[in-house]
Length: 287
Ligand SMILES: [Zn+2]
Image (cartoon, helix red, strand yellow):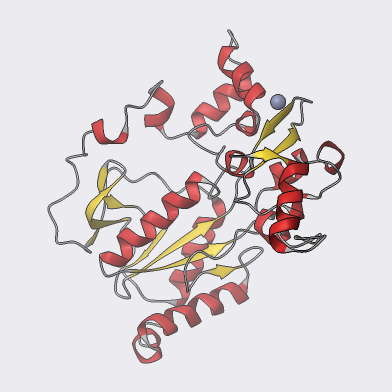
């Protein structure tokens, strides 16, 4: 049961046998990839405790204030799980979400956000539960782990991703143009996954992760989807290297935490590829 912050703190003081069970700064890194929540949290609304003193999994009721001024109560887990289907800044506040949904005339910002979403989720008002969604039948009948050109894969999204792909092509000789990998079990409604960059000869998938315009990408539920995607790839014989920006923490053993893509990033990627497949094998593909 989640409890008010003073009660929760008193209980932690007792169970840990100390006046300050969580000193300021303890959980700073854990919150760093949630700038929207850092902005919503104010110590004066929460008995003076700072967000860096709150474990992300704590069953504690905190008060938050959105940028429009709405004050609401939510646990850390509820807040971190807000990023879901809607790519709008309003997703970070229950009151703003309610207002955005009940607004009779869509505003320009809403239209623009809808265009940013995948066609499928933008057109469908409510998704049926996952179990009821039919599996797409366009995935070719290839052995698990085969890379291929998918007609379902989304178009490359970001300029940085394109830059990364081009930068790698000048350094590594790999078959280009493949955008999907056949997997054994459904990932959402496909028997395929779509990495940002596919290195077919090395059997390594590369992902470029940033938290996006509204801080909604690759956090909360979306992080769990990333983890499922990585597991699907690994069980198909592939390894994954994620380039993590926006203070996103590494998810896998070969992930690279960076602030952006520089010359140094390519060196780090190639070093990770060597760690995964061995230097002799990887160096044979260097241009
Ligand atoms: Zn609000």
